[in-house]
Length: 134
Image 1 (cartoon, rainbow, N blue to C red):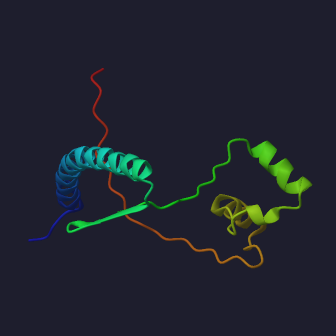
Image 2: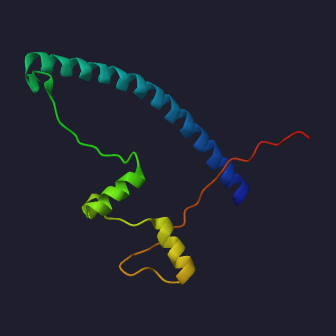
């Protein structure tokens, strides 16, 4: 028996629907667990602050405080001005925009010097659009 494209897509859509249901159930269950863990972490942080310590070691495990830095740009114009005025180009990440590179390639029919560019073709399957009663 030979399979048709329609049969393959039908099977694919059924599997994707099952996967979506399982993922939604898992996400909901994990959400509750994460919320409870966040509450426990807050309690441990308050206790560490009150006790003046940075860690707790128990028979069940060790809890410890860590410091994580983060930086987000709230105002790009101000940030770019600061970088230019202070010659602080080290504040930029070392990467290029794939959209801008693609635009350059389309316009110039060449890849910019020093850039490796590639394209990957994937197969995507969408469910049919709902039929409208007119």
